[in-house]
Image 1: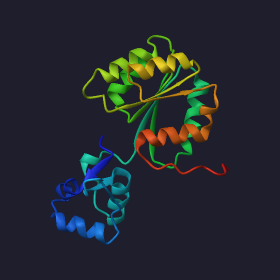
Image 2 (image 1 turned 120 degrees about the vertical axis):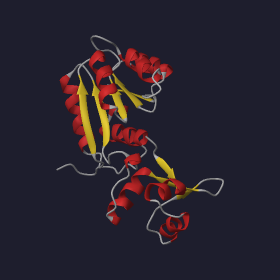
Image 3 (image 1 turned 30 degrees about the horizontal axis):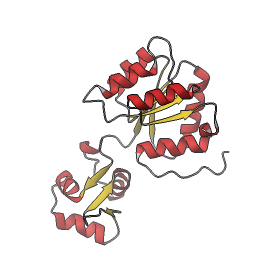
Length: 198
């Protein structure tokens, strides 16, 4: 799913003129950034917020306003820990879990997550099989893969196979704040640090 849109995309979604979209931009209602070539781009997150304020329906091209995350790990305690860290992300999430590589592969196809948080070593099919399956499928290759493993060597191996990022469960990288920051980076959303958890 695209994370940024052109003004022409928005005009097409609502059958508007480009001038109508430019009025929203010039009035400050629709946040944009400018490319090096002077073209406007609108981040998906900002576009969804703007559309909700206007009361217009979300176009199907934007998909759901929920980000789908699949957590694949054979340890239930790790899955629960990851879910807890994601609770404080500040974005609307839909989370699925898988207890092994084979189940993860099946859920990737059915659920089509934005991100797979993947353990490198699991029963049935290791993380390398899941990464190869995702990267080898034209319909799945936009899925981001975050390897979350206790084995740094395995994490590096999966990065070479096409994973987007790797965090060592047993290092400072696994600090909840760093973990959330990395997930937000992969989702293309701004991260706001959680100061106090009540």
